[in-house]
Amino acid sequence: MSTVNNTTKSSLRSYIIGFVLSITFTVIPYQLVATQALGKNNLVLFVVACALIQLLVQLKFFLHLNFSPKSRENLLTFIFTAIMVIIFVFGSLWIMHDLNYFMMDPIMEQHHQMMKK
Amino acid sequence: MSTIHSIEKHDHHDVDEKTNFGFWSYIMTDCLLFGTIFAVYAALRPSTFGGAGPKELFSLPFVLGETFLLLTSSFTFGLVMLAQKENKKNLALGLMALTFLLGASFIFMEVTEFHHLIAGGNSFEKSAFLSGFFVLVGTHGLHVLCGLIWMILLMIQVLLRGFTPLVTRKLTSLSLFWHFLDIVWIFVFTFVYLIGAI
Image 1 (cartoon, each protein chain N blue to C red):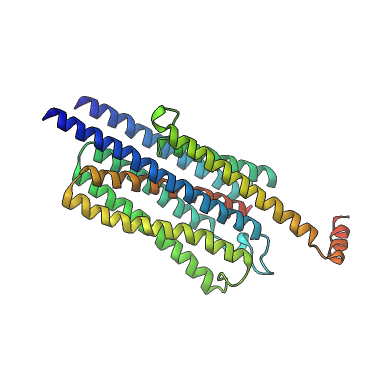
Image 2 (image 1 turned 30 degrees about the vertical axis):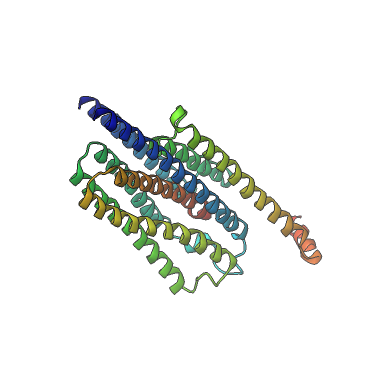
């Protein structure tokens, strides 16, 4: 019974750590965006970094994904999925950006160039 | 008798692992679904058709409230799983009810936001950007709604049958699903609302 209690205690601690870290990495980017601190580009990078950190925090503390042999298959399918998502999210954005650029009306493009100057 | 018992236990363990991996695979395909919808949203975001953009339309403090609700509900569902491990049925049921209330409040806030947008003339018909927004946030909301219905059904099963191996397996699957929805929301919060407000 005491071993059950001990594992429960350590799991409880891991849930609490995960919860506190998640709240922290939600509030910090929120505050920075609300006050518009940092520059525009830095702020975007920082906010995205916070989201990725929180992804890792929740995978570890809530979904219990780790490097143990027990969750190896889950980890491998997750890595595969992450690669697929990265490929088609960035691929789509790349294609759509180029498409917008090449489909631009020549007159509009001139206007665009003038605006840039 | 003890060998039969241990074989049964081994069987359950096997089925547990298979169910866990199967459900995890489903969640990963759901990740792909959300990935495509995120890509669509990102591609359509500049196309506001002369209407208001994310900066004018969304209220950050309101969305922060939604985020806290979902985050806390993910934590309380983790506690449900701990209560299940300790075989504390009433505690688990109470925590499930709490999780349900938090999730339902989240859905209520989201519906309020949608209603507010549509009443202000910013429905999904207004621009490509808003179509993308309603599809992305709506799909997530629909998932949460399904999770809530599943939670009610499981509460009834825990109440009537207790923590049988089957009920425990279902509970584990729902916990994966619920934590996964929380993670998806973190990305909605970041890419739609926070970056939208920058």
